[in-house]
Image 1: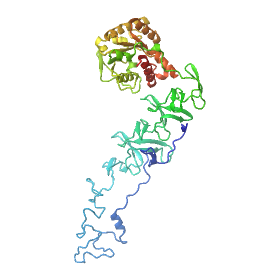
Image 2 (image 1 turned 90 degrees about the vertical axis):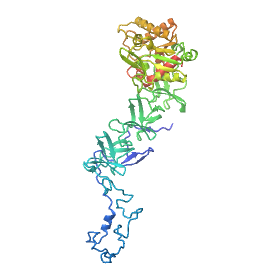
Image 3 (image 1 turned 90 degrees about the horizontal axis):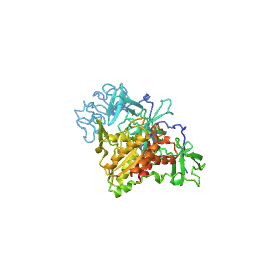
Image 4 (image 1 turned 60 degrees about the vertical axis):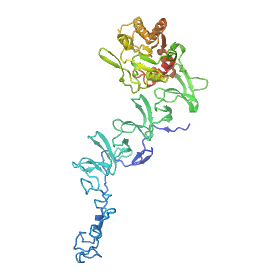
Length: 549
């Protein structure tokens, strides 16, 4: 296993003036502190005219004095008006310019030195009229402060509300990484930042050079090491040297981690490393590979002290739920034998996807209106269990409408809606539990819950001619009602059995899969109720098995 170890304590060793190129290699670039200017500015090269003046004999102060003869020349005033060409005057009558090959590089009409329409004699960038602001010359952008060109420094332009970097020659940096030292005196410490094609400092996640990087949203500093990405709900690791996100098995600071091959997310729980033919376990919340004896859930396991492999003779817990948790009517059977081409989901915020990474409240698809308020279908673009069900149905040629509404008790809400609001699809999946306890009254009893549930489910069953699957809701971390979700699941099972409705215990299935992962229940939620990225994985595993799809 040849994986190099990195050190969190390793300091950023940056050779003075290095930058990250498009190939991922390091190349030289000059950089100084943000508030420093270069200590010396190269003087412009002398012009040809100045060179000519330097060649004059001592005491001559004018190359164009007609009364002063150069060695070896004749006075043009004494040769009878000859038109002989004067090498110092290319526009002499006998030596006109060749338009295709002008002889004087200082001629403003020469192709290589075109006139500046505003200033025909300008040969380089100049400060703007006010002394401060932008200047453009030969396709490059420059910045001036009170007439002084910005060099080796970053500048904030309030006009564009952006930071820019200007190199030693004053040109604005574009599409490059720059190392900015703390100061000219201390160049061993500083930060790497990145500028885009417009010269703006890049912030947040950025894909470049074949990988992902993270630039601080305030300072623009390139991240190195572990970082939590809030929007994606994941811990990732950026290489200590390059800043590029890493994937796969990695040895970091003396411990082994597994970073998802696609997302780069730190892996927790059980994992099979196919390349090494071994089952390992990654701890929560550190994400480090476990070695030796470890209590996972209610069971002790032994892992090889060197390789971390689960010791022979032991098996990791099965993720396959017991048959009694699943619906008696498989969704696949419903789709094939009953000619069902569309399915409607009636649920609450959990099935709406609240808690999933990148969750957005709703789409443009209006579901129904109640008490003057309109309710829209949850977004189909969020990576959540409900949308994975949508994809599974689409693969079987069926469509899905997710009529799950956030913040409303399913029974209370749907019992108040008219029949048309229950939809006109071919089949329905109803999830009850989380928001249904106390939806009418905080003093509600389990018997009250059963009565309200029976009222709603009877309406749905009649509308869908029995093509209905009822699911109990997934568990939560803390319960504060008069009866538990376990009791809700048991009550729904009894009610469905009495009426002949198909029932599946999503509550039991979720607990089973989560327990098999060996992680604490809190690891799967954003707030103890709504499943996070890991929780959505468990929910989909449980949901797909309960529905038998």
